[in-house]
Figure (spheres, rainbow, N blue to C red):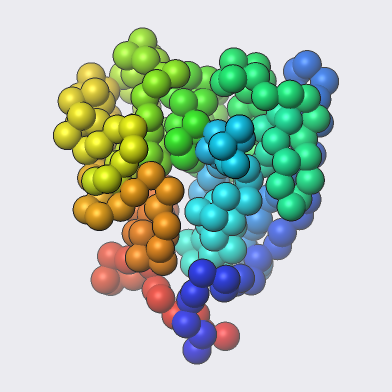
Length: 241
């Protein structure tokens, strides 16, 4: 029995992938699948602001890829948007301030669709929530999960589009967020009937600390594959080797 820690890597099939955008850019990424079975659901990860260090290897996404294929039967597709670099490599192109990245979102959704990955959800964190809200209402996307949404580039117009589409949003908002806190988030997202806003006591924008990582991964699982949660309603803290 292994305690699950920040650096724990659980079994999965992990494959480098390349996404090709409609304007001809090659984006580097990785697809992590359950080791010995088909996934029950799929996360397409849209990372934080690259000009502030956001990338596919940002810690929540790295840990999602390390744990969720094994613990929750979830496929995790993560990639670097245009011009973004991480340990995995650098995607072609230049940062588009959230505008040309619409083509990156479309390329990731297209890849997941063509690969036959089931129950596709967009998982956005910070800047990635803006991409989700503005560009994520694509065919084959079941809903969105938002971590620390700033609601800066994404306006009420984007929220109204999600409301009209009738697709669900799970919104995790840190109590001590730098940009948008729970009470204001509840007010802003009230225009989206299928938005579930969850305030997280003590958390900050970057979700630092294993306590908050476990909480985020549990809520993600509750949204996309609740059957994977144990009787306690949470992901396990140990792994049976």
